[in-house]
Image (cartoon, rainbow, N blue to C red; front, side):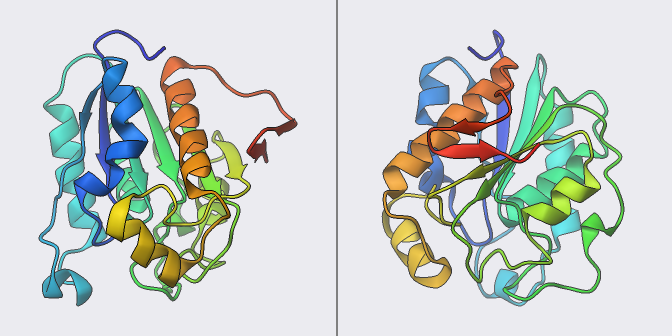
Length: 218
């Protein structure tokens, strides 16, 4: 179980709403975790044009985390994973960082100026849970492997039948699966992600080897 009075700040993926993650995070809420899924930039044409930078999102997330008390964990999906990774470097007292199929840079093509070219300043617990079903929304050169290399202390896990948008729900997941690809049973894969996030907050590190639904890279 997560520690008593724990808080989780979860940063959504690019143009994804907080409600798209309700099913993913509901079991944590039921377990007593105070969950926040803030929208730190306006979704719309400005975001599509890159007006709201990931670094500004990370700065805003760090400010939000500093205002919370008790054990505070930070997590993010896709672009939100990149923002969470950057924010953690400014939060030495953070209880832990969880990245769910993070993507370095906006858009569907890797950028030259990747955040993960520099190692993370955060030295606390980090788990990276990656989608085992590859697709254009988390391309090689800007995907979870970059974050794992730049965060040497991280536990790196691949959820075998997970697509980049499979942890979402409703129309967001339907559209995301069309754009990004997906696994055969997105509900089951999303459940694996929820379980990993709960284990992470509880400090239960999975053993090395094969497991139902996922494998540990390191």
